[in-house]
Length: 151
Image 1 (cartoon, rainbow, N blue to C red):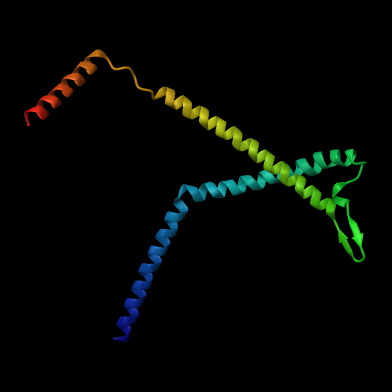
Image 2 (image 1 turned 60 degrees about the vertical axis):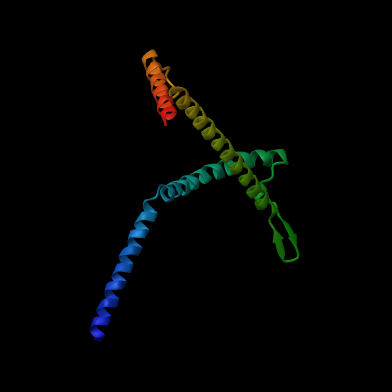
């Protein structure tokens, strides 16, 4: 009797595991998960580009404007503590540039898709009906009204 209970429990556990695996496969196969994965990878690469833009181009220009100082080295020392506000400023600049680039990118993508939608609407607008179809539709409508008036 104990063996039978153990076997039934194993069978139920196996069914649950198969259901779990099937559910996981369905989850992974969704387009949203794949889109998110691609977005994370592209975002990582995009971050490298923006970081290079900030560190290699904009920070030196800002440093020249403020007197030839490197922003990342700006700091204040108070007793034993060092406050590196230059690194903070550089990170804020980095964030603003990333946000601006994403804004521009999304704006371009939206404009592209809006134009595509408008083109599709123009292509799928109703084709003018020929005269025969109009006459047949009128006949159909007349037959419907005659049937309804007889009842």
